[in-house]
Length: 130
Image (cartoon, rainbow, N blue to C red; front, side, top):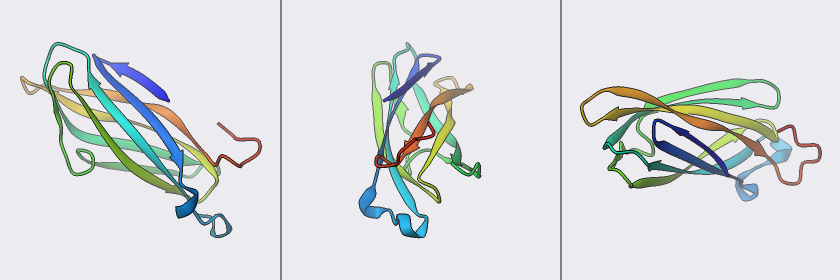
């Protein structure tokens, strides 16, 4: 589990290699990741956008930006959390992801929340890079 907290917003990530969806002989490796976003602070916030930087073992970088997560822009009151699962394919058997969410406070002020860097490693791989 990977975790970070920015401005009272705790982000936890649990990646999982999906062997059944991967095709290593074709250079196609798939992971899911489950993210929990928890509001530990005193104010209500809304998740507006996401940004991901995905890097594979060959150093290829893909950037992903978009509105919300899994089609939602969750509102988190103090003490509430939101969990979702998404996925990422790579052309190599390992890599890592890092990113941020743009949140908005109840009074409309935007702020960024870090998503901790996390490793994507095929479990059977020897000499994992991360």
